[in-house]
Image (cartoon, rainbow, N blue to C red; front, side, top):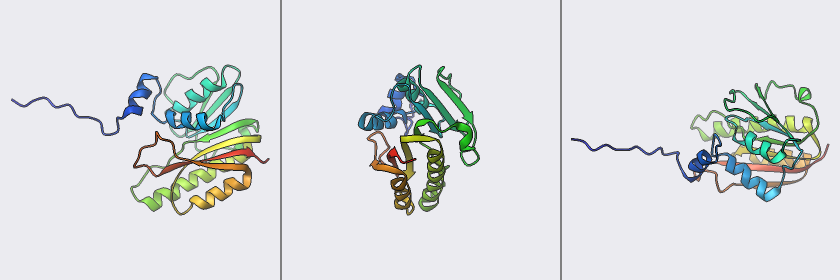
Length: 198
């Protein structure tokens, strides 16, 4: 008689278990939490735009930080299935097709945790990631208030420095940040723009 074996999910880790305990849909929330702890970007009453918001962890965390008087709008190709808070709105759509002017121009922070559907080919994945980042930056430049902030995930590759220069041009300062909660094998890194120059 064979012994019953329990298969462990290779993607399960401390952060995945913590997310479930804290009632967040994904472990990615702890990346934003680390960014927030270091740079204090999101404040009570702020208006936040979250690009690539599914499954909703960043939305929930941002909504908690902004409070009842704040507003958080999320956009993603995939519908967000969780129950949203009263100060939250989710738009199902493509960032390459969204008309930024329809969103308004009074956002304090634009967040982008967007990632392409990966192919396993590093150069292709990095190029696709850079394309998403450029779309996110273009939206941020349309909707941010002067002095606003921008957080964007990018896969490290040949376009990294060029994108960093683009952020440098539009913001008073920029930071490169690799959260502890990112998986060790991941090529992702976050570029943070501070002090948007309208």
